[in-house]
Image (cartoon, rainbow, N blue to C red; front, side):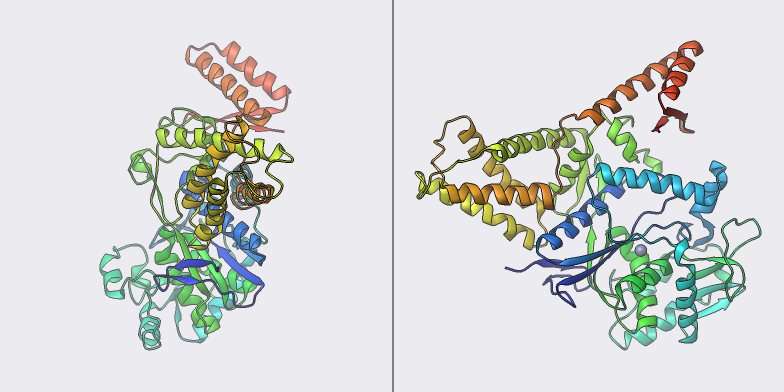
Amino acid sequence: MSLKVYNSLTRQKEVFEPINPPYVGMYVCGPTVSGESHLGHARPFITFDVVYRYLMHLGYKVRYVRNITDAGHFEEEGREAEDKISKKAVLEKLEPMELVQKYTNLYHWAMSQFNNLPPSIEPTATGHIVEQIEMIKKIIQDGYAYEANGSVYFDVEKYNIDFSAKGQPYGILSGRVLDDQIESTRELDNQDEKRNKSDFALWKKAPAEHIMRWQSPWGEGFPGWHIECSAMSTKYLGDEFDIHGGGMDLQFPHHECEIAQSTVCNHKMPARYWLHNNMITINGRKMGKSYNNVIKLSELFTGTHPLLEQAYAPSTVRFFILQSQYRSTLDFGNDALQGSEKALRRLMEAFEWLEQQDGLGAIGAATDTALDEKVNTLIAEFDEFMNDDLNTAKVIASMFELVPIINSIKDKHIATTALSANTVTLLKKQLHAYIKDIFGLQNSKANNNDKLEGVLQLLINIRKEAKNRKDFVTSDKIRNELSALGVQLKDEKDGGMSYTIQ
Ligand SMILES: [Zn+2]
């Protein structure tokens, strides 16, 4: 039974065959650390953490590269003069690298809360300026990029003409044809520098006030966003690697641009399998600033966003995300999350009870052969469903058919000999492999850290109330005494409050 994954490039499920088994190279686009990660970011990182864990479970030696974008991500596609990091650094009155460090730390904190394993390599865009410049030089030499006024643009039209002839047009991944793309591109900055509207920046000349700048053959400037992923994936995974992952929103233009850049430089399609997770909606709506429904991860864990009825433990959110197959849409709402919280607790209670039992099951034949057979079928489904494009939803459904059976043994409604000892051993082994190693689930029951978070949140709320009624003696007392304990409170611009523990 082999693993099949849906390849966005070919639009079909394909048997996963690594280029150089048992090694697997996987590149996943990481965060832009100009702000705090939100709920929408949780899905790709949890999805690909499970892909990483499952590949290792299958025995592959995986090199998982997930970058940190700390330069070059423009504020708006096409509006290339504004770099997100530079803009936010000015706003927050921080050195750009101070800002990057702050949000990288927060991101790592959130990832560990989710029990995501760290990637094998986590390269940064600013750490790979030289590699990006070298790649841009190569693209210019090959005639697919041109310099204009200190900036360098990729010549999409020329690429499309030449590579269409080779069966690899621009738009091969997203299915967009170039004419549509030109139609939909609005008039934005620097269009006069570009030969065609669909051309994208590989390097941008830094305006005088731009604080992040590097020397290049084209003068002082900074790299475009797309080139960093091509440069870093090539450096760490080679010209051709196995899996490239990310959210569906990255298919166009980001991954399309990566394909074009890497193909010109390395004369190969960079990755064989392109995996994309679907998006999360909030109460049926797309997430967006204008809807006021962007829930930061720290708000989610503490229940401090107005849309939240309560705090949700990271393990609950992780479980909620895995309850859907990664390519299906997923709608976030309090009811759904509360359902996940209860379900996870029920699953973990049965699992943890079973883990602690020794000597369950009949030595020799089971006394209830039909039940024994049913349990074996359900266990076998775990691998079957995971191998069918990583269908975590169906695996969890099979687990929930096992939960009442485990509970019946626990409550002595079924004899401990109903199942054979071999079946019980297999059940324990497979549940452990899937719950702990592959899905990375933890019991969401409040542990001491959660309790501490709860106490801190309570103090923050009391302090807020004190401030609202202008009782500054109380509010200062809370701040100062927490500070003496090594807990620093900080007022955020949006009226919220964050804390750091030293
Ligand atoms: Zn990327």
